[in-house]
Image (cartoon, rainbow, N blue to C red; front, side, top):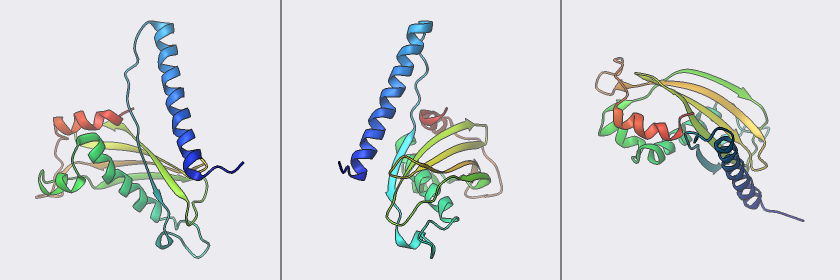
Amino acid sequence: MFKSRWVRHLRFLVCTKSIIISRLLFHRFQTNKLLPFTMTFLSSRRIDFPMVDSAGIVYYPRFWDLAHRFYEESWEYTCGIHYNEVLENYRLGFPLVHSEANFHHPLSYGDIATCKLRIKRIGNTSITWDFKIFNQDEILCWTSVQTTVCTSMDEITKKVSVPAWMREGLSKIQE
C-alpha cells in the first residue's frame, strides 16, 4: 500500500512522542521521580534544485546552510523572537567557532529534510548545538555538533555572556 512521505513523517513523529512518554513513565515508576522534560526543536524543508550538485544530491557545503536555516528558525520556538531581532535589537551575534560533521546518507533533490535540533551545552559565552538531519524515510543523513560564541554586534571580536532571558528560552531544547 502506498503511503505519502507526509504520512510516514507523521507516523514517525507520533512514534517518537510515544517512546518519549513511555520512557518518562517507566522512569517515574522505577524511581518515583519525574525526569526533567526537555523538547527538541523539529522542522522540515524540501531540498530544492539550487542545493544539489550534478549528481542530484545535496552539495556538502549546503548542509551547513541548511543547518543555519534551522538554527535561525529555532529562535522563535525557544526565545519567542526572530533571529534578526537578536542581531538588530539586542545587538548580539553568534558566530560559529567550531564545527564537526558526519555524512551518513545522501539527500536528493525533492527530498524532505527534517532537522532535530538540541542544545548540548550553554556556557557563559558559548552555546553548543547538536543537529541531526533525516530524510522523509527517517534515514539519518547528517549530524553536526557546532559551537557558537555570543558576541556584541557593536564589537564583534568581544565575547559577552549569554543573557539570562536567552539562557532560559534556549534551555527548552537543552539536553
